[in-house]
Length: 206
Image 1 (cartoon, rainbow, N blue to C red):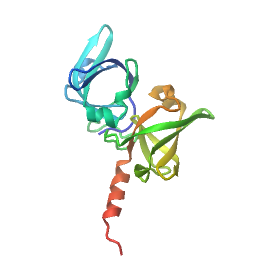
Image 2 (image 1 turned 180 degrees about the vertical axis):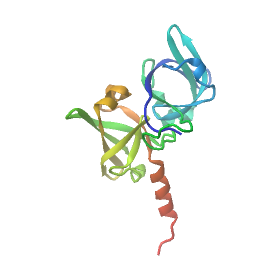
Image 3 (image 1 turned 60 degrees about the vertical axis):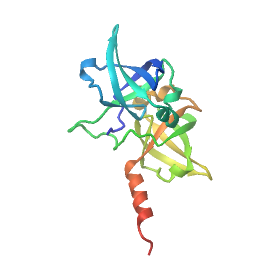
Image 4 (image 1 turned 120 degrees about the vertical axis):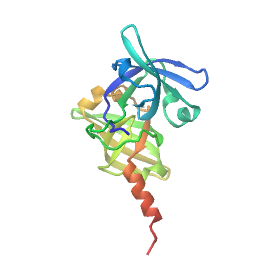
């Protein structure tokens, strides 16, 4: 489990495809502090560490991504140098600063607009309509691993578009500063919203 509070931004160092896709990502964490088999949120996708090391002064860890993961997330878009939002899994006693995030990407959204707003940035993101029912104004959503509050939601016949406000701190310490209109982002809907909707569907009508 995660909170959606990005701890640092790493970079893709290398991508290889012996069988599953192997991706090496830079980080500031000493290799001996990263357990093999540990979970790390990488742009919102929960991935398993398979190797660690240091090259020169650069620490890194590796993950394996299956074809299923590549097809359901933006990992297939990554290239050498891509900025990756990183968050290690929660430990008992850690502060829950954002909201409960599973690291299971529900869909890929498209950034439709980025515009300055005072000192912040307002970003609009389009997603499939069938998942739009789980997104509500003032609710939570995870965008590329970042816990954000939804400002507004607009539905069309096949698309839901929602807006989020990115404060200067979040803009500078995540990968969003490098996003542009048309960029694809990993989205995870609020876990609680999913269960509430399921309970409502299962409740008998009166």
